[in-house]
Length: 58
Image (cartoon, rainbow, N blue to C red; front, side):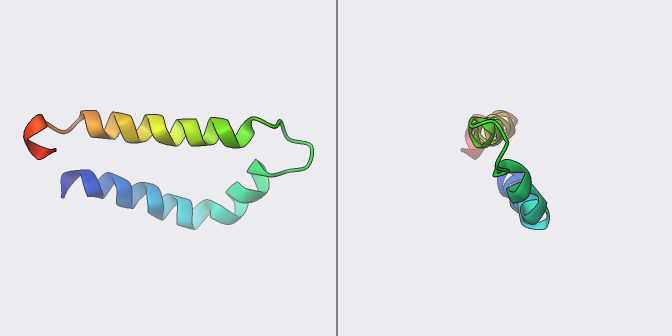
């Protein structure tokens, strides 16, 4: 249950901030790689959250 708490936090924050986040990510004059940087940041945060668990919890 420890690992799912972090995922619930990420999904909750995404749910709360999705309207402003989608406007920021998909602006017409934004850099083409902005959504990819955001997705990479989510992957890195998920990986770091996974590292905190011991191998017995996997």
